[in-house]
Length: 133
Image 1 (spheres, rainbow, N blue to C red):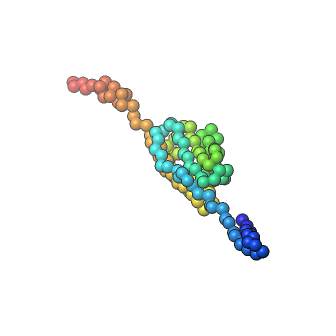
Image 2: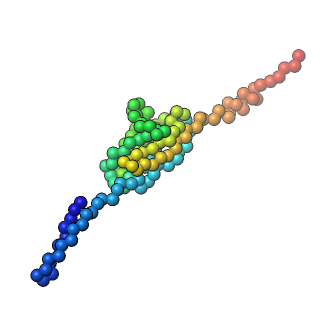
Image 3: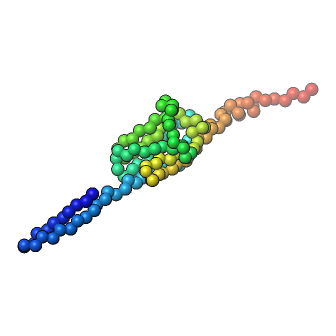
């Protein structure tokens, strides 16, 4: 933005011009690395320094299209950009990136398989028997 500032002093007029540029938009809160168990809900969130910014989500460096709207929910609330996965699967494990112009933030999502039910394993072990003939 170009501005002209003038000041009167007696019968003299002094003018100065200035070029004022807006600060670039940055990420004020980056994505965080997140680990969850399979089937758990996941919410990945970052924030920008200015509301209403259009961002691009990437999964492992490639644009993420969110074809399955039931599996992935992308929203923006003011400066917050949110990706919600209501029921995570092992295939969701990836590096997720939010890109805004030349700025970006990345967080790793790790989805772990649920361990075997220890009660069931203990019952199986205790129900085994050996028979010698």
